[in-house]
Amino acid sequence: MAQNNSLLQLRGITKVFSKGTVDEVIALNNISLDIYPQDYVTIIGSNGAGKTTMLNIVAGVFPPERGGKITVNGVDITGLSEYKHAAYIGRMYQDPGIGTAGKLTIEENLALAVLRGQPRTLRRAKNRHLREQFCTALALLGLGLENRLSTPVSTLSSGQRQALALVMATISNPALLLLDEHTANLDPRTAQNVLELTDMIIERERITTLMVTHNMELALRYGNRLLMMHRGRVVVDIGREDKENLTVKDLVTAFERAAGEQLVDESILLSRSME
Image (tube, rainbow, N blue to C red; front, side, top):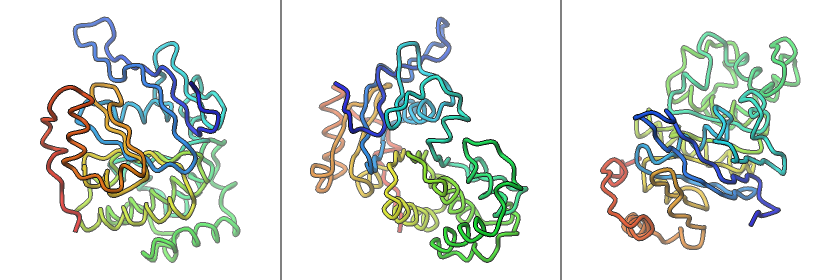
């Protein structure tokens, strides 16, 4: 039954790749899910579980199979283009090069981010008021980027660039923030810094968030809700009260009970130290 107060509703979401061929893959299998305002949901699962595919569906990268429905704040966005989905959604990727434009300056990147989902012209976005907004947002990072607005983004370190991507994804106050393993390509210390910045901004701006990770410890440490996916389905859904005292071993047990099979993916069983 649909929840009237959910921010994001997924109903009957299925996605099949290479349909009708010998390579056919059911990436998502009839997922129905409610995400509520200010939920900070971590999503864990093996390669091929459907995590990124689900984010891509929500972001409008491709549509679900016929009959699936995506609603944000009561608005059906299922049939909208990716460009129009961007008016509702901010997103970060594994690769900082995807979320930022290296040939443009910090200010120009932020100007584009402000116009997400709208007709894009840099001249329209660049003015004194917006520069002040950019500086305020960048100052929160504590990296000094607010003093480097004219710096080409290609000259930034990976951590600085991903921190900028975080500001870009959130500066226009999206209804929903999607984080697709956004620290996976960073060294442990930089990844920890970006995660702390992410946590700070999500809490400060009260942004409803879906964060995909391969790391069970991170999935347990961050957020107020945890989903575990397997073979295109959500097999575990754990809320704040049950999540707070959960261990990796508990999570493995919950998965094996729900999925009816052992968890054998070593990449998510082995937790990488973030210190």
